[in-house]
Length: 426
Image 1: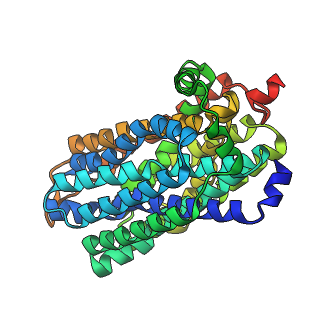
Image 2: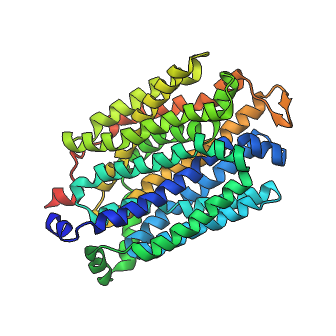
Image 3: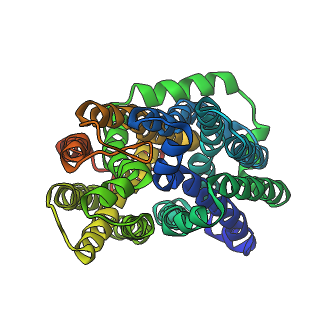
């Protein structure tokens, strides 16, 4: 594999880079509601529950599609799939930008979620195809770093862009980017030589599809590792992609760009932490020690952010950076599930793990909105509901509980020592 990789020169990196740029784009779209909350509430006269449902539909569609997409990437050409995915994102952005009702906005968000649902599995599948197995954790960590740059761009830069040209024109710009990306993916992405050879052998293909799903769904260790990843991943996205900015605007009396800048420090931490945890785990030849540090440290730092009032801005930046850095340990769940299952199901394994990440997001986004509306005291400003500190403490209290669950699961997860089940059988 190493010799073959050297013969290919820079081609693997070029293909991976384009897949990572698509991942960047989808992450920007994923977190964009965090700086649109008040704009959408004002434009369509909706409450926190409606906004949470709007955010959740993205993750619901995303979650439903993960295992089917994993099966598709294990069997079909990545070029076709990623091209279609980027085109769907662009189309969704057009519908979003031209929506006349909140129902149309939710529909557009679902289309964007459908297109974005190919990004993680597709990017990680490119890594699995084009790079040696021993580099999987490090390069997937680097891929997440690129995604976090997208998440950071979806905070302060996006807030300033919306303030300057409005949310509708902003979404139309994203539509153009999606169509351009779709064209580039079609022109550049291709399967690796080894993947092409695998596809020529269609023997028992239908049986392998069923056995792949059965292998994952009946594996206790796959469920435990994927649940750990979901419990650690979900609080970061709920706080960063929707409620972190309005929370800081209310509790610390900040304007939108400043609150967004502080929240983006969390994604900066995630950006640096993802490749670090991948590298550290590969270096130690252990998965669990870094996972323990990530879960425990993430629990402590996020709890301080939510419940310690009147923290100065610099302290919020430090704590959110630390939380993002530590919670990026979720990336190791992908490596664990991949190693627990046969390598022929690598994309399906990634899809299964990512599905559980999205299930929690799709479930808890509406729950947090419902709690906020239930606790709401009736305060409004410019046709927008105002939620006080107590409302946010009750609603966001769900997030530390998820991190507690990630810690509780760790003793039951088996260490793989960075070796796949296929390796152990040889």
